[in-house]
Length: 400
View 1: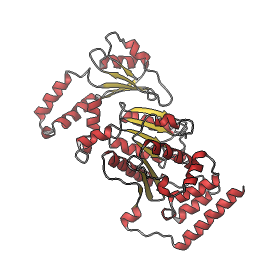
View 2 (view 1 turned 45 degrees about the horizontal axis):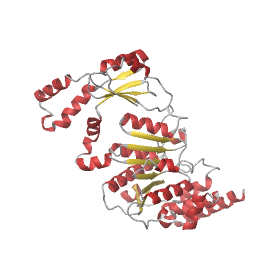
View 3 (view 1 turned 90 degrees about the horizontal axis):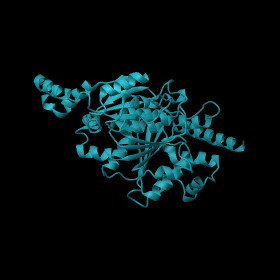
View 4 (view 1 turned 120 degrees about the horizontal axis):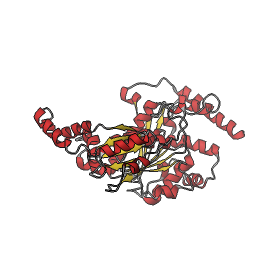
C-alpha cells in the first residue's frame, strides 16, 4: 500500500498505518517528499512502537560509486557529492513499513534501488537486457525448489510482478533446501517467499495463492498473464493442468527437478512452437487428459511420475527411496545443494528466453559428477534390484 504525498497528512495518520501482523502483509510505503519527510515517519514509528532502520548514507555512498566509478577514490569528489545529497536527506527515497517485522526501513527510490541492486550484473547483463528482464511477470508454482528458482531470479533483477502459489506450510524437514528456520516453522511457504521478496524489492508487485494451484483458481492465476510458468509443484495432475493452460495461452513452461545430485531442466516453448507437446511427449495424449480430468488413479500417477522424470535420470538409491516412502522414509530425498543448482539453472533459462535466445523445447541435465568426472558407485545389478523393489512397492500399494 502506497501512502501518497499529501499536504494534509499528519504524523497520527501515518502512525495509524503502522499495525503489526503475524505473517506477510502488504508493506506500507511512504514516498518521501516535502509533505512526508523522514523525521515525520520516524516520529510516527516511535508513536506506534515500530523500529526504524535508516541507512540513507550507505545508499548515497553506493549511488556515488554507481554514478562516478572513475572517481571512487577521489575524496574531494565524494565529499562534494555527499554534501549535495545532504540537501535531500529528509525527502529522498521511500520509507517502507513491514508489518511482520514492525519496522520501518528506508530504501532508495524505485529507479535507484533497482540500479543499485543490479549494478554488479553489468556488463554480464547489458542495461538493455536488464530492462527487459525487469519488465516481466513470473508465475512460481511450488515454493520448495521454486523458492530456489525465485531467489536466483531476484538476484538477476528479473520481474516486476510475481505470482506465488503453494498451499504447504513450513516444517523443519524443509530447512535443508529452503532459506527457512524455526522462526518460520508453521507459516505458509507463500508468506516466507513473499517476505523475502518484499525486503529485497518492496516495489515489486506480488499476487498470492496460498491455496496452491487448483482446478478452481487456475483461471484466476493465468488472468495475471505470466510471461513464464515455473512448475515446481508435486502433484502430477496439477502439472498437467498448468501445461494445458500455458499451451492455450502460448506461455513457456520451465520445470526443474532435483534428482539426487543431478539437475534436470525441462523446457516447453508453447510461446514459439504450437507443436510443443506436454512433458516433451513422455506420456500419451490419453494419459495427459486423464491427468487433466482427474480420472487417473494414484498408482497410475505414481508410475507416470517416474516416466516423466526418466529412468536414465534416476539412480538406484533414488528408486529404493521411492519404494521406501511411508515405510522407512517420509519423502523423497532432496539435497539442498542440488535444489539450489537447479534453481539457478531454471532462472538462467528463463532469462535466456526473455532475452530472445534460441532456447528450444526439450530436456537438459547437469550434475557435479559429470563436471568432476566422477563415476557412480552403483552398478547395473544395483539398479535392477532397486527397480524390482520399486515395482513391488507399487503392487503392494495398489493392493491396499
